[in-house]
Length: 75
Ligand SMILES: [Zn+2]
Ligand SMILES: [Zn+2]
Ligand SMILES: [Zn+2]
Image (cartoon, rainbow, N blue to C red; front, side, top):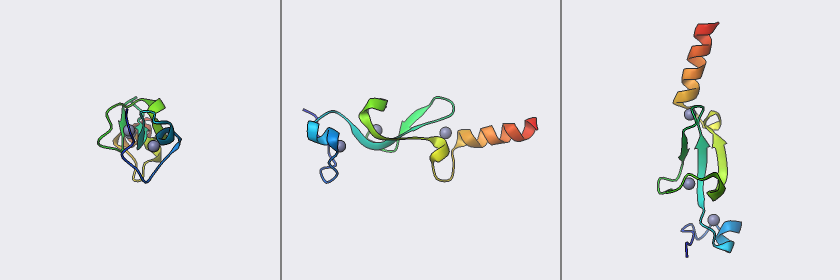
């Protein structure tokens, strides 16, 4: 049985005791996926309550920065 370790943050998956993660799954432009929870073991979309793209990350991300740079060169 996998229990959610964020005992004070019970979500639907906690109640149903499904294996899941409370971190935010961040997907990048280059298909790289990471989780804000450093203890996350499985980057499966289905395990995550919160998802975002790296364009939504505060301060941006290396891959969106590269994209902007290449766009500037092309124009
Ligand atoms: Zn939960
Ligand atoms: Zn990124
Ligand atoms: Zn996670």
